[in-house]
Length: 505
Ligand code: BES
Ligand code: MN
Ligand code: ZN
Image 1: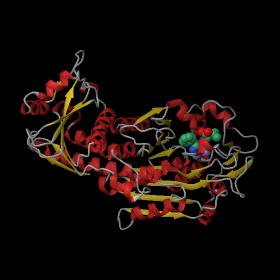
Image 2: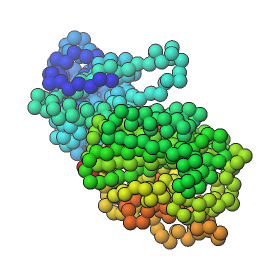
Image 3: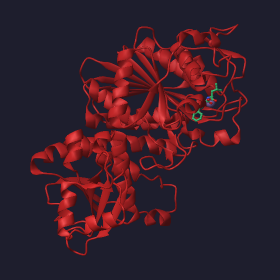
Image 4: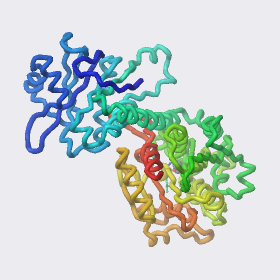
């Protein structure tokens, strides 16, 4: 999909499909056409209004009408797209509308698409953001993962080849830079989706390490360090090593660095369980089915790092990934085993399926010992309980640092992702006390599972450094198809984190 901005008149642009918008007005039924929609309506002798009225068209977000233009305008077809009440329109709504346009276009074999950005919309978002959002919606909504299908099946897939964003000459630069950012952000999201969707026997810890190494190749501001089990042992990463013991695949600890200048250092930490069987506390087959998703946190980091050289935020970003399989092999860690994390704290492992917090204990300890960070953010598909609490579309956010919490909430809202703060109540720490070690890896109560997971991690996050934990178990993977998130890995978190990093500069 190639994007271009054009100052061409909406009735003159030659393409397979031109889309124009209609809005709702508070308290009124029906629709109001945008200026460009009116132009097309006039060129078609009022046919757009006529058909929309005849069909009782409501301009709710994503509602559409398609008309063949029979050579009366440059485009073969025109689609009227509802935007709803523009005053209520969020970035997430806008992404969904753009994704719907993309999917409908693919459905009707559109190769060249023109979208006119209405002023009701650009005046609310600004031209750059409007363009960025449109690009993201189109790219993310039409994503497919078909590399493992037969070439015949792949050939049948339809793709939009070029997209023209129509605007006026003074706004060409703003729209062009919106396109640039939108393309970079989408590229990062798709990078993360591909990694999650790839089969788990491909995306092993070693594979993730290769991906990380490749990302920094010949890039001056970047570095990558990979720790093997031997090196982990020297550092005292017994927690990560214990989870890896049940597998034939070697674990890897991955460190990525980007130096973009500025004074601040942000440390991102990702859970990279490349397959979670539950270990000896084995999952049942239904719950194991999607467990290739358990490296989604790591995938977010790799996606983010893949575009930092394009977006160039002015700060240092360090990425840490604990990568291992969680398997029930003969050497597997057993319920009742005690292991020591890199910060010296001992963990009684009572349930080997609560492995994410165990491997992150070493990553957070490492962050405390080795990195002078101004903020640490971990992303982890940590608990099913967080999905119970917030559903499939919302990540749980845990932090004691109000500033960091507010920054992440703003970044989520501005990028169209959903997060919700859950409390790190110290009273619940009681539930993690072990009789024979410093902490145990499961709670003594079955309630509040997402909070207990977060409180466990807090034991290993360095004191005095703002830290936030994002439990992305729900939104990391779409079990059903939605406009912006086709079934499978969603790349959730990439947009929010990129927005957060850019806001910090
Ligand atoms: N990877 C899972 C969490 C998960 C579940 C992510 C469903 C995405 C979808 C994690 O390792 C896990 O198994 N957590 C346990 C923790 C429990 C044993 C305390 C869970 O949520 O059941
Ligand atoms: Mn697990
Ligand atoms: Zn897991």
